Length: 610
Image 1 (tube, helix red, strand yellow):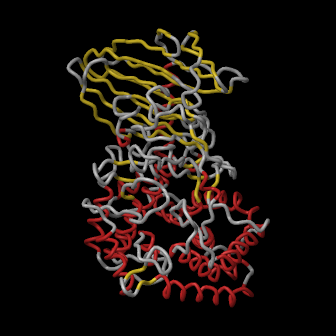
Image 2 (cartoon, one colour):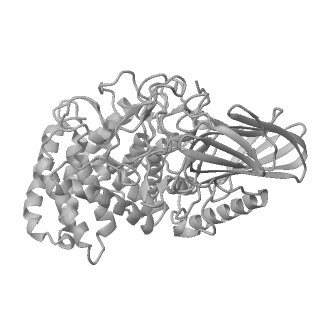
Image 3 (spheres, helix red, strand yellow):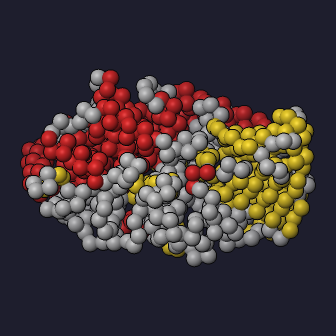
């Protein structure tokens, strides 16, 4: 059973796949060739599911950081014998720069350890376990490395060291002296193809330098945000880029599966997919921390993935695989014990079968952000968006599972109705571009019907708040969206009352926000949501509470780990980050809240209240 804190991990990314590295130099998570591929290392979920460790044999003080403006990880071990520095990265394509970053990433994990002073014994342990630990590969030493065969993959470990092989584990100890360095690399290939080539140490060194240059070229092009928390916004932008699957533009919700929402419980989901519900807020974040090319690529992916559903008269699917796959059927992996015994471990996600009517508004809001100033639209995109608007107009009255994917009976959730209102509002604004001016009168009537329904049935007069469901009595953090999407202004008394109620009744003792406090069809209780806490900061900025907004923002941002990565949630008892990691939505919330607070407190014109 893995017990290492989730926040102890650092992300490596090449815009195709992801690895997580612990503070003591162990790669405990790696999926190749895609984010959603079966893992090669998964000690994160089970002690017997594979890892690759490089570290001093004796106790050392550890510090780590990303090299400036990159996701190349530098871990420094300072001991009584001397100091070694470990660099880790997933290689970018040769001389890939700027917007092309990730276009031809070769799928190579690079590791270079350098002794900078003294004389330090270093231990290397390599234990690959493909297919989430089901495969214990056959290892064969070769000149300049080691080849491992088993399952669908063949793995080439390039190293100048002679490793001892015992079963499916290889290890050695080497003493490095000041000025000496070792370069190692791991590359996977298909079992039916040629073995990946060996990489000499000088090649590893060159690829590391080139990968640093690639990340820095991207960061220079995307240093758009200036204001408070500028470093955190920049780092969050790099995290979003690392979680982007470059071939399609899809952005995964997180790099992992089954890190729990409550420790020891069963709220363990696979987040290595793309959700439509994240679209408009993702695009806002990209507009702040990235640029139009990333926005357009992400929306184009979603439009392609979604288009055929509406043409067949079906519900718009709420999520997709990163290549556009639709069938994301969920299954457990019973051989894995899960992080701290949180089982079952799952791959796939059955939420793809749910109905969530908010997705229509999310797509139209995203289209409005991208295309509102466009001169023309591709006919297929135009037809698709008109279909999205028409479907929202027909289905806004229907119950659903809400953006939180509550696994119980369908209900009339406030947020779902709100986003259908957003869909109508944005469709009306886009109507000339969509060639749909003849639909404006009907869309306007529908928009006003939705508005009236929300104000009548979503507002609880006795409680003086907007509630989770129509005629309900429970609070939900998604009500914070009302000023963020422009449904009501921030100074509306009903908005202020709802924001204040959430700040008091949905927060824990640390000031972090729960999504809701009502039964959701699953056992156990989850932690607080960092995204919702950033939403609260964002909403407070729009209600004129700038000082309080800053305090709430700083509370949420303080749960980033030592290299600036945010989990999904925080355990309300222990204060420990939990949930899949790093969580794109948490970083999106940070970026958007930082911009809103800056604009509200500095009097800068903003699109925060869309």
